[in-house]
Length: 178
Image (tube, rainbow, N blue to C red; front, side, top):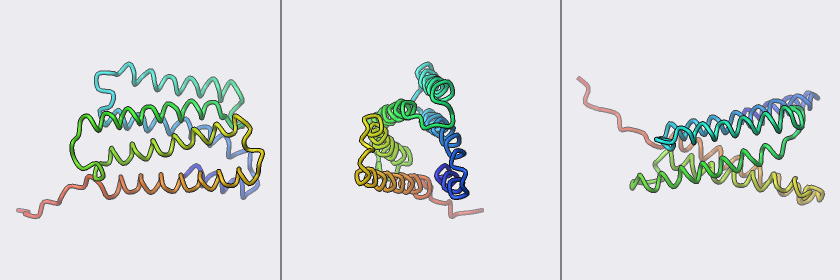
């Protein structure tokens, strides 16, 4: 959400080129932080080399496609496709891990809600970036409708994350104090 807020402010101030470098750094930081969180949820137990390989792939793809490729001041659809694909696969692996390990109420599990939100969010963003790769952004009505869906997707993702962080996995307070 802070990325969108930053972009909106600098675009309204007339500094449109400043929004892209921040966006390109954000699309590097977001998957790294989410994969780190999945590691904290024990997804990569016994598979440290896989965890490092995924992080290295994301960082290397960002360096090659953003820094050395199109440049930090331009939109990098190829990196975003790679990143969103990796995030969707890691989220699906975590969902499988949750189903195998837990037999509890999934709607009260922060891990499940965040993982489902990531699958929903990143799989749609993957399809969204593919639209640009195939030139489907030429029709302005279609493009407007796609962006309405992107906005709804972002709102649903944010609400699911808020639900997961604020209202799940809460322990009952201990009422008998000494």
